[in-house]
Length: 97
Image (cartoon, rainbow, N blue to C red; front, side):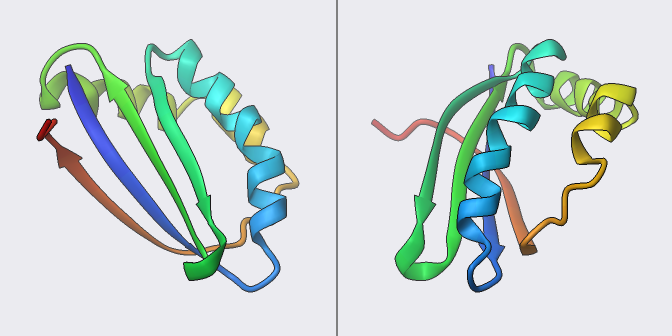
């Protein structure tokens, strides 16, 4: 299994909009074989932090990610959504405990 940590910097007053919309995109991720392991709104630091996994190695994750990114379902989920995300920090992580 490959696990990716995703930290999004969120514009002021945008966290509620992102949190309300997130289940929409999470459902699309699930359709493409991803599992949302956790998601947290860090209001104090204006960050939305979430963890997504995919069975297999990094190459399998990347292949699935390309398919997901190009999907009509993803495009539909973003249609009309004014994202409050100003910057993304993405990294593959390994369980430490």
